[in-house]
Length: 430
Image 1 (cartoon, rainbow, N blue to C red):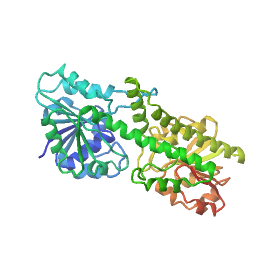
Image 2 (image 1 turned 30 degrees about the horizontal axis):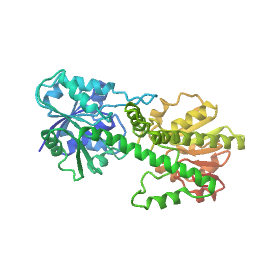
Image 3 (image 1 turned 30 degrees about the vertical axis):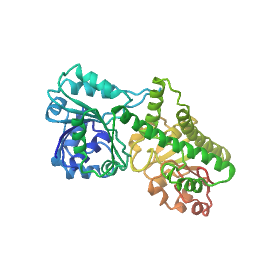
Image 4 (image 1 turned 45 degrees about the vertical axis):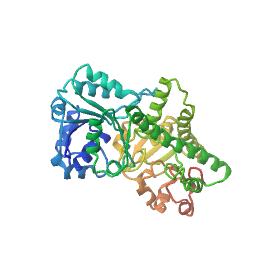
């Protein structure tokens, strides 16, 4: 059945949800308070970088429209997805300002039954707050559903349409039936739970994946000292069906808009309920330490070579995205700049976003990967973009002053690079 759906927020989550819901045949209205974003979307311009989303929005444009008018949207929709940002502060506190404002605007414009679906990542208990807040404005019937997202930037459309599971936290049968109808053409397991459990599932999932990353990075440190190869160790661990191979890739740590925020968010929730989540606190500490250790490795090589210039390949927190939020690459580059080291950087997509996060004058943003190597003493790989593995290191050798490579993602071919005379070091292996 075709449903009339509103999506509040046009970031990675909201725009992906809007595009995919339109593909599923629903009538979708995407809402954002930022007029410039809506004007871009109305002209067919995409305000985010996400592979494939532009083609999706163009192909299914008959099912989707864009507006800043939330009042009209609430009246025209039967289901309202909330996909606004819930960032964390430096102290790890979850900023619910955008979310609460959206709820109040919805509440003040409801005139009959609506299902409010929470897509944003929110603390446990938010569903209860939403119900109480709406009742201040509207005394009629409505439902609240928790439907957390599990999208990976760079493959968000595939994750939406071919998910491992769809979580639906609900309290009444009417809302459950409507949301199941929305997702009826997606053949994924649908887990029906209470709202509080659904709210916790998202935080717990990302925190567990972050734990796997920090764990394998600690094993990588042992490999470096003992002479093991972390890629082989990880392969052996991952072959155990109880563990699996995913998120066992050693590197410079996790970043992005989800893992750091959700780890901080779950720690905040734990503190609220007076639970000392010591394990998760250590996960965050290990992640930061991994980046700091990489900086010290770079400084040690520069001291050894009496050099002062670093070439950095990669700025985004992962490939196939322009997102530099909490990117380990940004942390490392800024740390080097603070030491008055010259850094020449290149990323295929994330250069403009990175310029906003790197305030130092001793950074040179280069036109391509080879230009960034000119006169460099150490080449560091910070994001595993495919193009970096395809570069001819004979050309790199002609441009660098000293031939040191630190592969922060174990992305390059060590033996091939070493055969050209480079000194290569990865994470958890030589």
